Length: 321
Length: 309
Image (cartoon, rainbow over all chains, first blue to last red; front, side, top):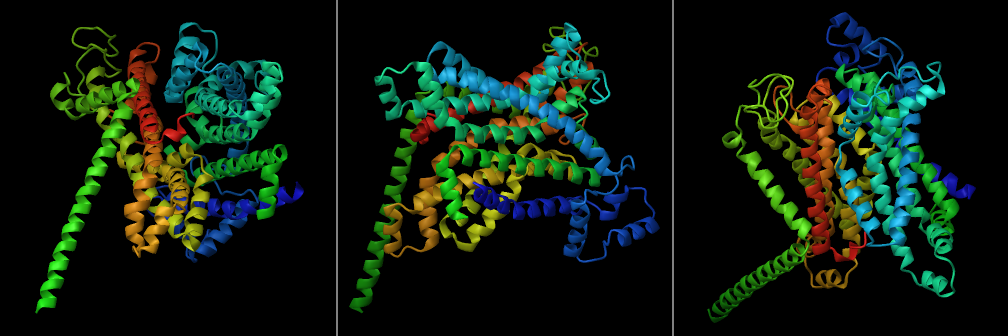
């Protein structure tokens, strides 16, 4: 097992290098001079020259990348152009807030996905199954930002049950009760699409497994339906389900951006959006790098989980490594 | 003399058979398409969705002739509710007719869904065929670079690329195309590798067919079905993503209309004029659903093995 983890860890090194290079290149891909993107449009030529020397912009690209990477590894992304604070100070607390929202949304999506998916698969083509499938189509097509606005319109503006915005400080704010109240609507808005995808995957995987011969044998032996579902089918369905669940959590880290913008949630997505509007390249780099790295790590955890639960994967991957 | 006459006669005959072969191939293609259409036509939801989308496309094309007002003109009271005189679906916060803006907005919103998916699919087919059929170090280089792009969730990738470039429709199209390429390429490559192992490919190779001929005439048509199905299902999703980028202000700039930016503009008057947000969002949902239904129908018609999913 430890060998598998070690082998899998090795594979993420080139990916991380590539990701960091792409993020580094963002500053050069932006239209206009790099010094403009780093200092804003009003810098004088002297300041630009200082910046060129300070950041080594006169050096070859790969040297620049090496220097930049050296700083980033130490958690130093430079200063935000928009508000002169260190990017690291700005994004790490925001990332924690995003992680809270992404985790609650993922948890809600998992619960809905597993229960609805398994129930639908246990009674295929029943009324419940067909309703659930229509529901997944519908919720898979709803833009999260529009769903968020509808929720705000109904629950905050019309019925006044739940707050729409106003979450500024999560720690030292109004306490956990306040945080939970502020979490409900964004969580629902962000969880809808992933839940739809998980329901479909769980149902398809379970249906495929329930048609296998060993399930027929179990049924012929008179084992109760629930036990078959839980012990014989679900266990074998776990790897693909875990994979899709992990992917959805990873997508949520980036995808909650829309929901964060709607509900003014102080997360990395809102920060990224603000940075894009201000053309604040260092913050864009920091925010996108931290999201991409966490996405890679989530996928790593899923792979390890799958290897842990499914010996077939462990052995074949271990051999290859 | 006689030999040269003979050989030219031979050539003529060969050209003849080649032309016959082409005609025969063409007939087979038409027959396959008809078969696929019959399978597709059995799925009533898909056919209804196709007709609906056809109407939406026609409306978008002819928007200048059928829209009651100019989409950027203030024609009614600010935030007038649906059913007010002259504006069936009401007016937005600037008093512009929502119906006209929806009709015109379809031009941009449909483009944002369709163009990146088509462009991404074409690029992915090329990359995937090269990686899958030629293999070797080319395969390694292409797939390892795509691994890096996979590390960015599609929405993040699109937002970052669109945010770095100047806002505009073209920007959104480029951003989504880049985000899509890795996903489709992976499917093309897997399918190509499995087609490559088929006996008919080996037969073509043994017959001395050059690589481009094998790839274009034998591999491409046999790996296309799942790719087309996958891409079609992506169009609706990409419309949602694209409308999100518009919503964030990365696409068309005011006063132009597109469904995403209409939702965003309605947000400011959510309580006073909920219809300004509700209608464009509803249109996005319905059109995106229609693409899903067509994708499902195409899957059943072209790729029956995947039907359980």
